Image (cartoon, rainbow, N blue to C red; front, top):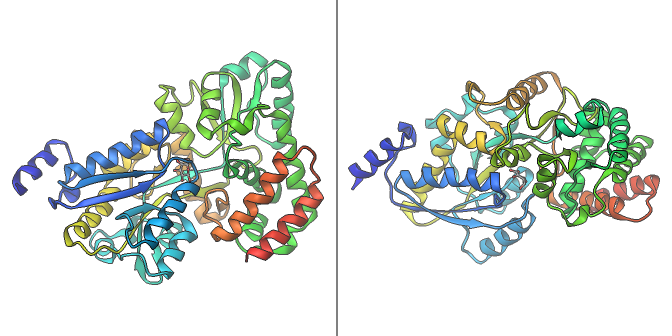
Length: 418
Ligand code: GAL
């Protein structure tokens, strides 16, 4: 049995390190249900099955993972957690503090994680001195996706600064296209737009002070009023029906030429790819206006829950190993739109957007300009994040809005949630 599973896995071209024939089950909670995301999950499932383990899919739709996190809490407190769950940022620490997570120290040591994982990822996946999660990828969030045909038709250049953005958006609107595709169906998508504007207006240092250090002198400042002012201006250029859209329907609008642009993390690239579109040809990626050379990061990770069944525990380790396998990192991230989490890999098969992303990630990690995404749960606790989501979304959706009042509200809400 062991022998035949091994040959099956080798036949499928699996890397030797991920071929360990245990017959356990891994139940994996995730929210990757859009076209590009589902393709990426399928790869993980195939890898696990080729190891001889069983994959039990636990998919909860809803980008950003809010619904998934709610379901996870219910399962975990009833004593029946999945083997692994997509959990990010500070939430991993919280699950760790509550004592739910298993440690992966053996795998991490044997496979030398320390040698190839970037520092920011190590901080996220370690609780105290233990590795409790495995990172899958790095998504850059501050991207602008543009349809070059629409730009050519209107005769405007793809914007580099915020001023360029508003000037181009006005012309695109007059030409009868939707300037900015936006999925406002969920608060995290409004915050994705907001944080891009905040990074442009505040710069990386004040962004970090505001959303990571929760510094009131920035949260409640004229600079933050300016962030809200510019953010609200964007509302003039989104589809009037934006509240009914999800992020991937917004991406489809850029892909099919109904809209000119979208500001969204590079999981959007997974959608373009699933739609058969080619980077640099059918769509263009540039840094979100005013954020050139800066990098807002989102790192997807799977945290591992304590299990009693020995085979299932071994299967968890197989999953962790498989995720960091170089071959898997290539195929998964090509589909997902992200870049590998391993810093020691060649990116030959990746497109220019991914190559730019990696170069900017490495440069900003070294020289400054690397900031965590608020909308993706990487910057602060889930409580503070929820407070920011509320204030920002209510402000964007309201009929009339007062940026000065919004900055006050933001500071007050963050303080109450700290
Ligand atoms: C994010 C996740 C990404 C992406 C997006 C939309 O939270 O980190 O991987 O897929 O949601 O579902």
